[in-house]
Amino acid sequence: AQSVTQLGSHVSVSEGALVLLRCNYSSSVPPYLFWYVQYPNQGLQLLLKYTTGATLVKGINGFEAEFKKSETSFHLTKPSAHMSDAAEYFCAVSAGNSNYQLIWGAGTKLIIKP
Amino acid sequence: DAGVIQSPRHEVTEMGQEVTLRCKPISGHDYLFWYRQTMMRGLELLIYFNNNVPIDDSGMPEDRFSAKMPNASFSTLKIQPSEPRDSAVYFCASSLGTLQHFGDGTRLSIL
Image 1: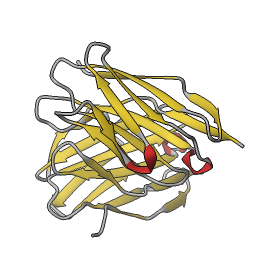
Image 2: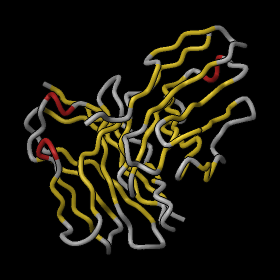
Image 3: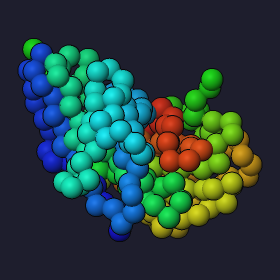
């Protein structure tokens, strides 16, 4: 069965510092992987996705993630944090079996220190 | 293009009352998902539909919860009777394939 683990419920970085949010998954089928972002009092918005092809995926707002099959990871990075990046970030993997359900991680709240 | 539209955005009601949450998916999408988000349990999938047919309702907490999708452009999630522990943010999402698009949610408070 598919599952997603996000390491760290809260991550705090200084403005301008590297952002690294960790996501590990397990999947019995080739995975489709997603990162979503949720700003306060809003719904979840797609940040980036991996389906097939290039393993380094670029998303909105300067974020990118790399699919590493050998490590079953899909970590999210951004070279330089901005105050506006403060939000909660969710990693998800497709459930497989063509039912389009997503299996969600517990979320990581990113805190940006001035 | 209009996204997923949920109504109401906020609902405050007393326990025991019936609550109905509404969702209009993106036109052409054939999957619709209802989620609940709380601090304690995070994001939980309650039920999802494919082509208006419920596929998996195993996440529905109990019989007080019911969901319908009478046509491709409308779905409801009903709680009857409501209880304080139902207080949460309820999201609707729709998709054509694996990419889910979320509404802004309904913040429900049961007093």
